[in-house]
Length: 130
Image 1 (cartoon, rainbow, N blue to C red):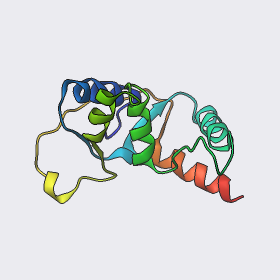
Image 2: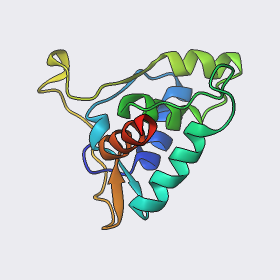
Image 3: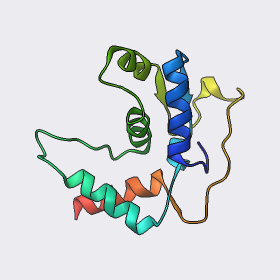
Image 4: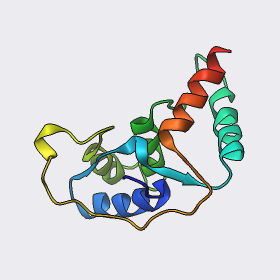
């Protein structure tokens, strides 16, 4: 997922999962969300603070969980087929040892204005503490 748009990765992953494939996404923290970084941080911060801290909705703050949530939004995850497909998804922050050296799909480079999931996660955690 290095320097690739998170939404494009997620749409391809969702299609493959619904076809029955096992999908593993690596380097999740290097995936990018296009657009103004300041605006993106504000939108995600609003999502984090929405609702009740005990009842939800609960939004993730780690890059791999964010990417998983983005993929989930592109699938019928409440239906049995979508639940089975979502269980076949694996997302890792770095490349695990068992996957090093294996062939991986690549995605085109991103536009100039973008923020990585790693920086977004740091901002959300930093602002939550303050």
